[in-house]
Image (cartoon, rainbow over all chains, first blue to last red; front, side):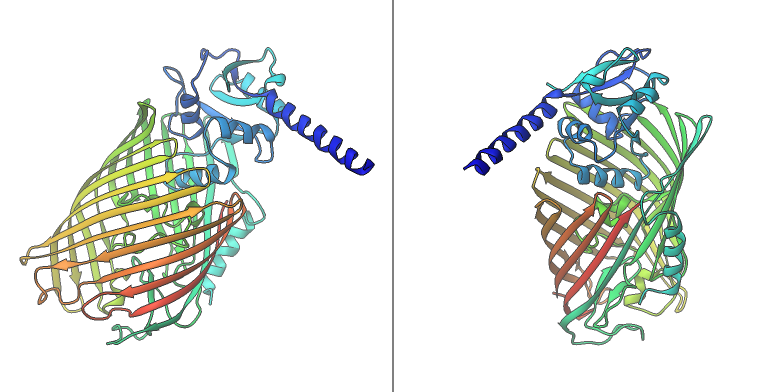
Amino acid sequence: MGKCAFAGVAVFAALLLIASITQAGVVAVVSSKSPVSSLTKDQLADIYLGNAKNFPGGGPATPVDLPESAAERQDFHKNVTGKSGTQFKAYWAKMVFSGRGVPPKEAANATEVKSMIAGNPNMIGYIDKSAVDSSVKVVFEAN
Amino acid sequence: MITRKLLLTLLIVGLGGLPGSFALAQEAQDTSVSFSGFLSIDGGKVINGSFHGPMPDNPNYSCPCYIADWTSTGMYSTNFSFTPESRVGVQANVKFNDQFSFTTQVTDRADEDAPQLSWAFLTYAFAPNWEFTVGRKRIPLYYYSNFQDVGIAYPWVSPPPELYGWEVTNYNGVSLRYSNSIAGYRTTSSIFTGSETVLNDPYYLSGSQDNINASWKNMVGADTEWTKDWFTARLVYLVANASTDDTTVGATTLARVHTFGIAVNADFDDWFVLSEFTADDRTYTTNYYVNAPAYSVGAGYRYGAWTPFLNYGWYYENTNDLVQYPSPVRFNRTSLTLRYDVNSSTSLKVQLDNYREAAISDLTGNSKVFRIAFDKTF
């Protein structure tokens, strides 16, 4: 009985933890110096899928991805490009070996995303909402 | 057997890549260089079949056999072999600035003597959404043509031979591409023109030991692809003057080619359906025609890392002159593939093909084929 109750509490705690991670939310960010103020989901997907090489009405766009293991990456792609890790890789294999571009650059973590973006108004990345600071500007928020 | 040449290439590639990623990027001011590559080690054999002869005019072939790759006559027989389809490709992309880049790709196949230059073109992005390219590219005949050697990008061991695999694969020329989002669809469209000549074309090896050169001249074509959520459709049309020159016996042919193709894919989270139809019509200057409608349709389901995929393909040549064209090629094929994704850049596949010839005379016979594949990108 005691074991069951403990297991129940542990499962409940795990569910809460998962819920809190999911709720935190991933946002797309550009340099605070970028003229871009907001993007739609489709515009953002176009940039990450290499179909748009420029910001709408603006300069060149260089997307930055997080490593495949990052929870933010799975969240972001599920919401924005609609592709799983394997689908995204297969899509970019198609694009790269069709000579239509190179996949997004990869940063190690949110800190590196911010430092890359802060100094380059052409770059765009995504981070957890809680990691946003004055060096970057939110241009897209899921939901 | 994996040939010594392929092993050498694998070794060279392996030095950079096999353990992980070797997409090294060196940035010097504006110019950046990135390298990438793909590798497929495919092995297989005909497990049983029937053949009524006569044997193909080539001492290297024994039938019943199965042509998996028509372009290079990659043919499996009853002896297990890695040679017909194994391949490796390396690609470099040099980005000079936001407007100019250069892409080159070299592909080495186990069944060909020397590596082939698949891509070597300069891209000029002269306006947002527009790209102009000049150089050597793939002929974008079908949905998978541009990346038909990249095993990781599709569920089969190799794209359906009912559609893929003609006497020419590349062209030297120019193209203009426009990509944009229109009414919620991600779209890309291009027009292209150019020509290609293949000396001693391996495409003809299944039927002849002669030295045959093949050309496509004055090729002009256009394609457009539309994607929204789960839906993708692609249309293509091209015309060309196709000629062959059999230098062994001194015979030539000349035909006007018209090719139309449509691909429709549906990709839900788990289920997906891939379909493609084409009509290749050739009208010869000696007053006969050969038209070849073909289609492929398949469905798969993703169970986590596992993807079973069932496919049916059909190819049927018609002609009005069995004297000038005595052996129209006709066949159908059912395949079942099981793919396992080791990770997002490595997959393993097992495939069974049931190939049935419906031709007036046998080319390869009927066969059941077993194949395995290891696919990787780096």
